Image (cartoon, rainbow, N blue to C red; front, top):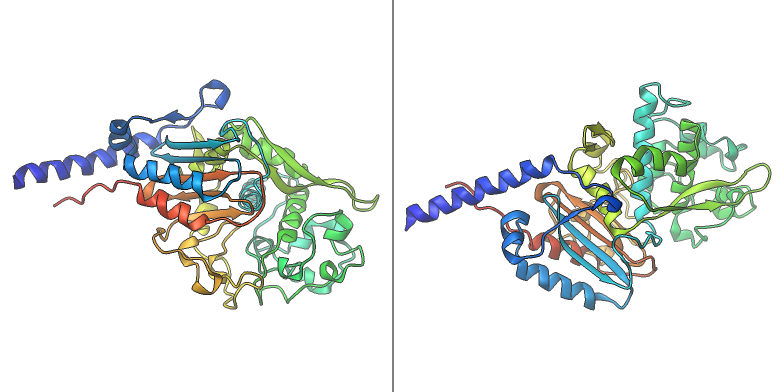
Length: 387
């Protein structure tokens, strides 16, 4: 009996490694050409997907009961869609607003721009340690001289001091408002000196989109499509634009709409170390840096009292959530990166589990982001260790 159990353990161990190796060479074609491969039978879910079918059914039921919004949710394991739940929204075609998930996408696009710039492929060179406002000519003259000290990286990890959401200022309006030229003191003055505090800021990512435009010589939406969306086979999208006066102009911001299945492509590219087919799309250095905080701030985030250490380059580290925020990272692997967004949107990838977790609603409001991640991670069947 002991020999039989040992053989079974060895078989499961090597099967898990074999499936991970096979997944490493798989990339889904565009949805118009067939899209993601899907597992549906309990046997295939266990054997190929490495998941517990009963726990996946429980997750499906939980998703349907978690709120009343229309949504599409997708879970990808070893390159297979092992769960897809839809209520009103198509996982393939519904490109609703993904809210703050767009922050992680914006940071990723900016990393690609930075990498290309170091190769001499863009209009200007840029590193994340560079002064951000050197790439935002529309912001001159600066409404607060301290803005000159803000780095590109600080735009992405909520330590810039630019109009945190805690101020109550609207996130969307015209560029002269966003850039501090409208007379609103909340956008004119920084809430704190760069790098000395943590304030979750949607405005900072609008600035990041302009940095990308200057570096690449292309509007943010055009560069994002060419450098990230199209190489990954993403076929449907829309971008948010802000109007501006003659001085500030009309530019795309970082806001975007994508389907659940296409969001999963972005997470899957991260799992493959930024590679898609035979191309390196996302720089490996960026993926590595998203696994840890990218600043040294210790004070709690201003609005939600979040542990500031959860913030990386546009992505978040949910395992580091703190009790003061009312949210918990318990049961979430420490290497998980996620980006939740208002309305129950979320994009997450967990390298240790070869797992992508997505939900898209196009709506607004609170939701149990971490509970979704916990349940999805718990549904993964871990291969027994070799005896």
